[in-house]
Image (cartoon, rainbow, N blue to C red; front, side):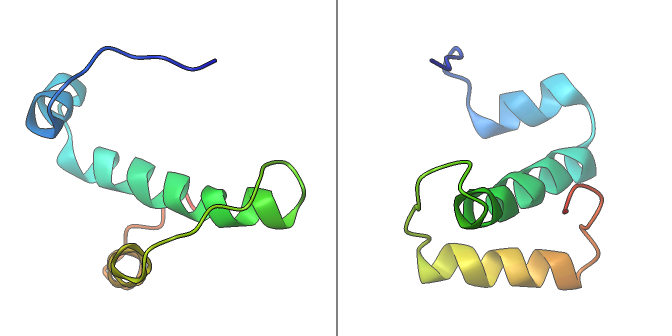
Length: 68
């Protein structure tokens, strides 16, 4: 089980203190949704096309610190 307290994105970014770090974390997590399912570590999840397109744009923009 995984749990966290509800926190608006702006407050989360402020608590981390680095918007680029947060974006890199989100890009890496988004990639893992697909990669982990392909490796049998997790169940397959449907990724909306808008999310895939945003992921691709962010990777092309240089947010690659946490991708596999």
